[in-house]
Image 1 (tube, rainbow, N blue to C red):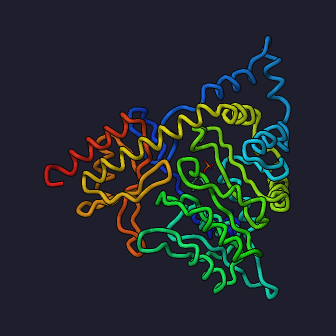
Image 2 (cartoon, rainbow, N blue to C red):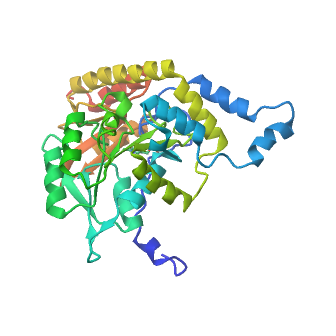
Image 3 (cartoon, protein in one colour):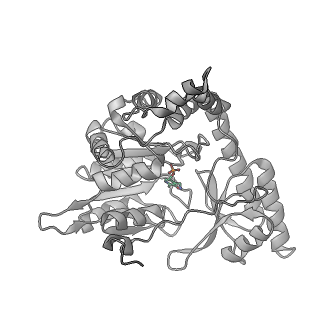
Length: 375
Ligand code: PMP
């Protein structure tokens, strides 16, 4: 608290990112990064951008602002997704793209000035309530069902009951890893034609159905992607949104009122190189889903209830051991995972990022040791 702060700052409850440890020896399965480095083409492209026969030549590229419209990257993304460049928006990580979407598309009021709430699942990505506070949006949560699945009928009912001003959810959801079928999302878009629906596809490449093919017929759909997860580029901070040009224009207006140059030159060339290497992408996504299947089976064999995941993490509970204690015991063995506990909504659960096969083996061995012979 400070008398120097704007009143808004007192009302914020900022997102707390997962731990980024300083000790390299830890096995880090807590923030859903990719277990392998990105395509080697990315580092090559960034090095080439910084290369030159003289230091001045390299410096010259850093002296000038990058392209504010990121036209080349948007054209590539349009190509990857079979859309038009006017249907693509890029930003500094999908967190920033989502923040602009909250402000530009999901903050609506009635004629009398009262707020129309924004719907999102309970439980879900915890940045959504943070953005609601930042932008003065009223949240309205929609409970997952008893199996922790998001039901489209529940979203439609809540939207009508509360006169919602927008809907946002990750697909697959985080931290559950469970996806909603494309046909169900289509049903939602048809039922709420006047409401913007933002589908956050941060983890979609690991096995869920993308909503991108629905964009053509649904001007109320915005799909948000990131290169942080399936392209292994969390360090580069590149996210993007896909939708009708009318929605993209709103995001551009907010961006240009905030920071016209969200992507630096190195991120622009690195992202281009990552998107060009589709062999790396296909192999890496398959490797993660193979590891996920193996880890899920091994956790189940240790007595865990593991939700069927379509993401690069699993959400698992043990009937006899609380998640916080397990997470602490794993940390003592140099393995970082996240634990979630919301007694009113979910039993204690661990969210474990899929690591390399060796990291997953180390995790399973550590859990076997912690659980002991009785399990
Ligand atoms: N959406 C979801 C559901 C996430 O879990 C994350 C990562 N924490 C993001 C968006 C943001 O990813 P980034 O900003 O790295 O693109």
